[in-house]
Amino acid sequence: MRSETEQGLFGGGHELIPDEAPIALYRGQNSFVSIACILGGIALVLVEIYLVQQVLDGQIRGKMAMIPWLMPILIAFFLFRGIANLLNPVTVAVYPHGFAYQRGKHLDFCTWERITTFCSHRKCMSNTMHTFKYWVTRDDGAVFTFLSSRLNNVEELAGTIWAHIRDRLLAPALEAFNAGERVEFGPIAIDRSGLIYRGEHLTWDRIDEAHADAEGDFVVKKRGKTYAWCELSTARIPNFWVFQELLDVQFGAS
Image (tube, rainbow, N blue to C red; front, side, top):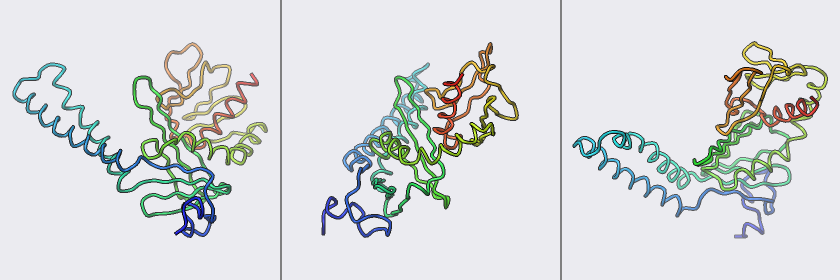
């Protein structure tokens, strides 16, 4: 049997996958890390049982008594991450004309020209674990998801995908925007005069700031107001990076 570099990672597994090595390869965490996550989750379950008993016996009181109620979140994180990556690993291989996506035993291939939407949600809060989620939709409705908890270097992968599809997705949106048309991005829209959200049109001269914050929300504030006129998860804005480029065009011109 030929090696990955001789035949390609998925040689013979899909008619669109070339019989050659991929340009880039992205895998999930190795099995040892997955097992360590599972064992860590089990250890935390034992700690949780002990702490609950201490609370019931009155040995832990006050604010410390809240710890057992918060630990299930951490337990679920370790167990899910370990079990999912061990039993249903994700591998993505990038080729010149698209990417191969394998999850468990399921193998599929998506060419660059068939991608219709590119979505993202990035949480980069200080003193917490950063989480990144990206997903693309193919023209037949198939969705390919790339999570930082399932793949290494997922930001690099997202950048690679974006580099291949940016011009094609941006061109029609930019043309419509420059022509003065309204460009829709799910629940929010943009045109030459401002942003439209929940039926309200906010002109550019009334906007104080518009940006994606560290929690992964797109926030718009009116001039002279402290509250947000719009606070919308970027996960709900299809092709958010296209939307962001149109904002950059507008603010660069103003």
